[in-house]
Length: 107
Image 1 (cartoon, rainbow, N blue to C red):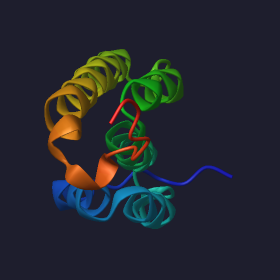
Image 2: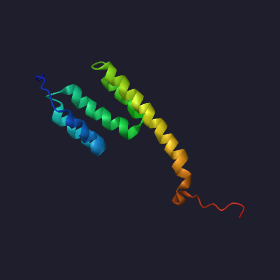
Image 3: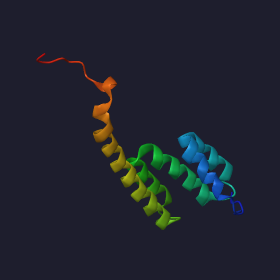
């Protein structure tokens, strides 16, 4: 069944940013009949933020036919989030004392 497209507010993009995958799914179900591209974009925002590089690839394949420029944007954002996650693990991970393995080898 085809529904007429209605323009919806860009404030819907805040839902997946603030509430992650749950917010993206809620925004998708609210927007899917009025603005399908914006609904899919909300899901892609949630997936990309939550999964980083893998989420960027998934988002690319969801949006590539309807909006290729936005699909590339999510792919690049996924790459950036993946690199930032790796850098944060390298820089911050060793400084957290709770992550000490506690093997006490050669002590």
